[in-house]
Length: 454
Image 1: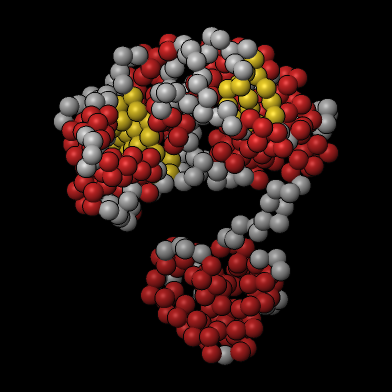
Image 2 (image 1 turned 135 degrees about the vertical axis):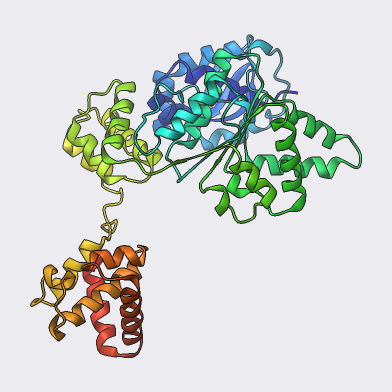
């Protein structure tokens, strides 16, 4: 029997196609399905303000979307937490007639977000190869770039590309069966199948489900379980699909060689196709992403504000979009212009205002020069070996090696072309002095406080 949650997941697909990404993420996505009561979908709102907004602005689109999935649907009821207990007893009630043509998502693993497409994926130097490989796979699944392994940090666009591939395939090759699943979900389903195997043929059904698809996408493969059974099953699933020319796409936050619990035979298979990385976007790309988001929400936001956001969040696109959403949402709630700096500052007042400034080698050198007033940057990186210069230089090298993860060769080049053995000797010498001499320990602490603004 279909559940209320499953009904709502299919309703959400209908809604996403009819509202903006901002509206969906701000007002719709967080609604919690409670039950179907007297042919009304009961949805829990987190607070009265959100309840008021969805009742005033989105009740029609939600009701119409519900009716497409459940033809007998009468409407929608929005409730608050204090009313939840009244309706929870109806959670397992018979839902009644369902329009099977609109049950697109039989399970959450097969859904793709309509808002994630190649058209709205901003391409820059940091992701151009991953984007090109993804498009090639979407256009000809199973024929080239198989498997495709995409890796990169959190919030840089891996999931967007997975969804874009899925959406493109569904549009151009609707007969192909696509599955989009997290590594955790794969593991949990395998465990359940193994538990039930003594009484039913659940393992056979499990294998049939995963090995009968045309495109298999697995996200967050870095969470692969260390258990032999999980990696064994994934290995055989991979082989079965690969030798049938079925497309395999894998995402991770690190390259295959850095996934610790991964067996060597799986690692070599992941590396046997195309491995594409997504790195942190540069400032221009971040601004372009924000402009695209603002345009999608029909918001005319000044370039200076977009630049402010892009400079505030540098390593996570998802987080950066969240900042933009917060500004737009805040301006709408208080009925002011989105470009009003009072609005912008109020929306961002709690966002990383106390975040430590990025530590760079130049900043460390500048702080050392301030601490030793008779020494300049030119002295620090120069060739002079007078006592007044050598000690600050050695302290500087020590702090750079301790606070940054730069190669010793690069550090040596910065400090006047010195070789890595000189840097290593200086580092070890000063580390010993800082550990055993109170004077040097105090100097190191004072300079660190300067670096971190304490």
